[in-house]
Amino acid sequence: MAQAFLTCIHPSCGRREAVGATAPACAACASLLDVSYEFDRIAPADLRRLWRERLSSPASEDRSGVWRFRELLPFLPSTVAPVTMGEGGTPLVEAPRAGRWAGEVRLSAKHLGSNPTGSFKDLGMTACISAAVSTRAEVVACASTGNTSSSMAAYAARAGLSAVMLVPHDGISKAKLAQALEFGARVIEVRGSFDDAFRLLGELASRRSLRVVNSINPFRIEGQKTAVIELLEQRGWRAPDFLVLPGGNLGNVSAMGKGLRELAALGVLDRLPRLVVVQAAGAAPFYRGWASRGTIEPVAHPETEASAIRIGRPANWPKARRELEATRGLVECVTDREIEEAKAILASDGIGCEPASAATLAGVRKLRSTGRMPPAAEVVAILTGHQLKDTDYILRHQGSSESSRCVIEPDPDAACRALDALRVA
Ligand SMILES: *Cc1c(COP(=O)(O)O)cnc(C)c1O
Ligand SMILES: [Zn+2]
Image 1 (cartoon, rainbow, N blue to C red):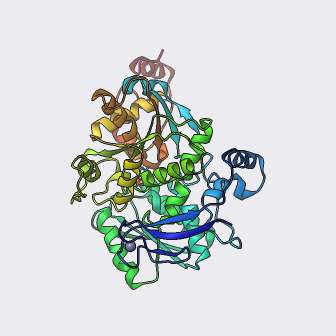
Image 2: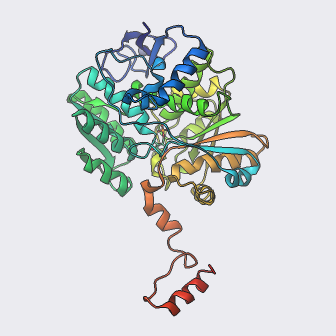
Image 3: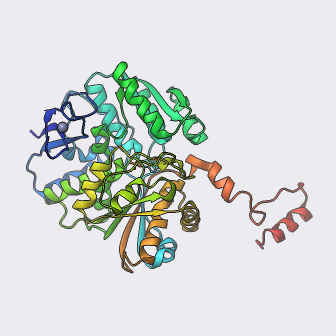
């Protein structure tokens, strides 16, 4: 049987705990924790075949794009059924116009917005809520820029747990707030930033019995790493040259890196793609810290319209740095204007996504223009959230244009004039 542990990531600590321990960080040094494993030895070809066969299985665990890969996340006791809603199984779509625009790269988009609540957070949440159930949590809690809380609310409802979310007042999109409310989460709006809400959550969790399900919860990372397994399977186990993600709290890049290293260690993958993190210029502490190879200087007042990555103090930065070092990764930052342009280009390929997700394409273009990414590179952009998560953004940018929208009386002449004005036919 495979074995799972919690391991402190600090190189001079490395403390190991049982996988059922519930503290949010290392009890000795307060560093982040990894879920680490002694995997069963299975031949790579057998693993690939097992995973493929489950695609035609009727069992809900097999139909989940997370639990289908359960050999790589063997942390649940066999008596606990995962809390799953068919997450994963998301499309990998070619994006030819976007690839040309970015500077003649071969681009495709792995769209994690096609998850039950519309973002990649569901991949982490199925794992972390299942772990919470297996260790008898009753109340789960998070600080959120919106998607973590939507996802937590759904999976908590499914599992019969209470959910509390701390969000920046007026700082998350209406759609995300509405989702969480419908799923019955309790909402505390904090007059402050995400970082204020996250700090407050830590203080609250030391006073009340709350299970924190932010991405410092290492089980989140375990679920999210399956995105890279599924992606590689969709590509016939051929790694792209670059795998590009937006960076906020840096949980997702940490997850992708861990997944890649584990696939390589098991012999399922023979070459690692280079991970690329793209931050918004107004919220780019990791970009700056990486450029200077120093520690992270938090940004006190992070600013970007891409609210999902409006984070000034990324909690997972030590893990993110480890994964970028392991994959000879790159970090880039882009302006809101560049994000807006990239989002419109993706839309011209018929691909909608959240503003934060479009930062990936903007980052690729910038890396091409500065020569840090070669032409014809094979690039996969991880699109993190669904187009409809932030329609206010779209209406602000595209909806006000007179060349795309008009109002008329129900009259055929007026309709013809409208076609002329809109330059259609
Ligand atoms: C959470 C989120 C991000 C940021 O991911 P991190 O793991 O915090 O770096 C990016 N885009 C969307 C849509 C998100 O919901
Ligand atoms: Zn430690």
